[in-house]
Each structure stands twice: as C-alpha cells, then as structure tokens.
Length: 407
Image (cartoon, rainbow, N blue to C red; front, side, top):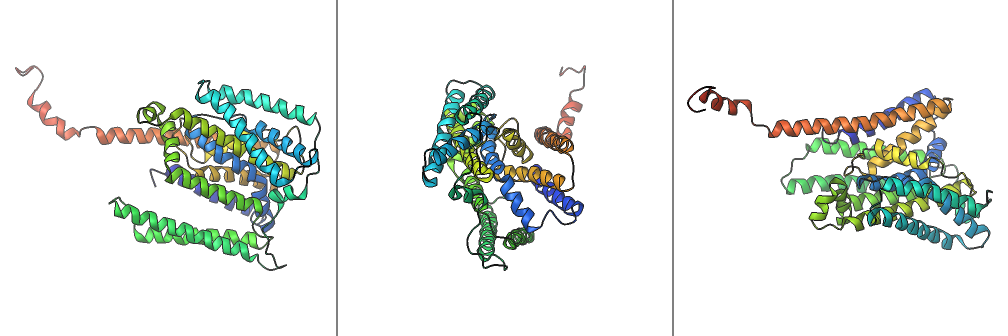
C-alpha cells in the first residue's frame, strides 16, 4: 500500500467524490441516465488520457491533441457529407490520418531532437489553423446515423422496460476475468517466492471488485444498457493495460521514461520507442476526434478546445510522474473519471464555471504535489536503508579517539 499510495489514494478519492456528490445532489449523480451520460460525455477525454499517459511516461508532453481532435473530426465530416464516403471507410481513414500526424511530430521529437513541448505547441497552432481552413470557418452538420451510433448508440438486446441482459452478462464476465487475474498474479508471485498479501485480503479484494463491477453493470442495464462507446473504452483499457504490463513494448516505454541513456545502453532503440508513442497518440487523438464529432453531430472550428489540458490533468491525477517512468493506464482512467465526476457533480449542484475551474486546478496541483512528496519520502527511505547503523560505527570511533597514535 505504501509503494502504491498514489494509485490507491486516487481510487479512494474517486469513491469519496462520488459519495459526496451523491449526497449533495440528492441521489442524482448515480441515476442510470446520469451514469450513462457520464460515460458518453467523458469518452473522448478517457481515450486521450490513455495515449497521454504513454507520452508522459516517456518523459514528454503533447499539447496538440485538442487541435488534432478538431482537425480529424473536420476531415471525417467532409469525407462523410461532401465526398459521400461510407462510415466503415471514413473511420479507418481518420485513424490513418492521425497516425501520419503522430509520425510527423514523432519524427521531429525522436530523431531531430526538438523538445516535445515546442513540436506539439507548433502542432497545436498548425492543426487548429488547418481545421479553420478545411471548414472555412463554418460547421458541417448533420452527420450520418451510422457515425452517430459510435458515440450515442447502445448495445442491442433490450427487451423494453426490463434490465439489459447483455450488459449484465458482460459485467459478470468482466468481473470473472479480473478475479482470475488477481488470483493468477498472487499464485505466480508465490511461485517466484515473492511476498504476497494474505489469502483473506485477496479474497476480500475479489469480492469488492465483483460487487463494484456488477453494481455498475446493473446501473447501466437499468437504462438502455452499455453504450457502444463504453464497449470501445473497455477494449482500449484492457488492451493498453495488457501491453503496458505484460509485453516487451510496454517495458521499453517505461525504460525510456525512467532513463533514456540507461535504456539506450541496455540495447533499447529509444528513438524508435518515442516515435511510436507519438504515432499512437496521433491515432488515439483521431479516434477521440471521430467520437467527439459523432456525439456533437457536427464538425465545428472550436472542437477540441482545452482537451489537451484535460488529458494531461487526467494522467497526472491518475499517477503519472512529471519526470517520466511512472504511470498506469488504469490510473489515467481513474484520473479522467475524477475530473469527469467533478465536472458533472458541480454542474448538478449549480456551481458556476469559475468555481469549477478553480477546484479542478487545485485538484491537479495537489495531485502533482503528492507525487513529489511520495518521491522525496521514497528517496529518504532508500537512503536510511542503505546507511550503516550507528551501532556498527561506534566501536571504530571508540577504538580511535581523536589525538591518539592511530591518527
């Protein structure tokens, strides 16, 4: 718990925020309709937060994601409305465009060695201007139903007023998989002779995990079921969590962020790793652009404004370190949910935008300050563990007093 205090702390903080606003709103926060809206309203920020976490872990930053969201969304709308292309062609084309944008920025950062702050700041200006150029300063609307389903549709299988059975089945399957992963991880640690929590603690964790997932699934099933974008988010979270925790590519990202020089000396192609991290960020930005445009049912010149700051805040609040090398996908998701619940809860109780911005800024500041505090505490602990005990040094001091012949 001490070594992972920040991740656990943010999860506990999320639960506390949910309970607080559930009380302050008189139960409105966790109503099925509002929970569904929370998922849909924050889906694009969650997508961006996953990619931003990887960027921050490598020790970089990306200020261009909001402009890339706007640009790819605008191009997608043009392909749909002006060119008449079908949605199954437009969505992969938008993702390819995002990959090219990420490759362009990754080239300057990884191979030319221009700081990421400068490259992505330039990208923020370039792609915002490109959005205005392709749209001609006007919005494009409406968009085909086939695209809107991506952001506003639900899984089929509803039988009217009853619970949505496919959502409950997906929740049960997800809970079973997570419980299996928890016990498998415990058994593997035992096999390697590593310390593990008591069996009762693991069992209690499994019960809490199952109860939380099934309660969440029941809330969604009580409305229209799991949104299509929710299924997309589950796939992204599961996929990126697996890549970052269990593959060589994920370990390389952490190694580059921990120490690029040490990673290079160990044989890792650090420049290529950084390049592909920004390509990945471009793809996820374009996916967020498609989702946001589909939900808005329009491509507008002002789309994506301040999205980069929301994604960066979500990554930092969720446990990413400003110096790189630290961060998890689940942590970034928790950070995005903290911001989303804060926004939704403060809006429900009628808090003004001025106070909302102030509170979100303080939350971000406290999260980063907590990260710095944890690092300082950890470094002090390591020094104290490696320092020789005072009792071992005392005999030598007593055996060679100052001014004796031994001096």
